[in-house]
Length: 238
Image (cartoon, rainbow, N blue to C red; front, top):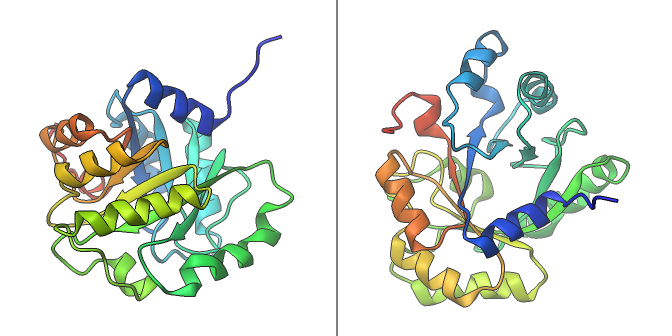
């Protein structure tokens, strides 16, 4: 009998084998079903996952978008929710995010508690994820909505300690995020330091607009890189 890996196990296995993964993040409020098939065809050939979520999304919109994507694409669809309302049982997995770089209890545990009734009777694979917001050079929607201050890019020690605290607390993934539309992505120095300290996979996103920046993130140690805004607006330089 063939044992089927979970989505987390697949990410862990890829990290162990040093196979780099690429996720395209779809903001439901910016997604149009009428052009969905074209959008899917334009995905980079290296794409391994589709993330769905945004800082603020209209109620029910996430579910509509997930169903549209699942009808057109066989890639795993993983929820990357901005709050408890962005849950869809039609997705494959859920990044169960805790904003561990901030001290706002709303995004450390309260949103997670509110989501339980929605996810407990679904088949979603729940992946505990430590979410670390890093200064990308401009105030992002994540910063505004979460009412938290991002960690400074030059405070590598604090970033590493925060990531380790997430691992020690049982998180299975650490997500380093510069924020949607960031002027500068998470630096290679940060990625290298965090990857060296951790025993769990590292996700990096925010401000990545070119294949060169993507490659630099991989070379620094990112196991999975997320591109979003640059792909949505067509500015990603492949």
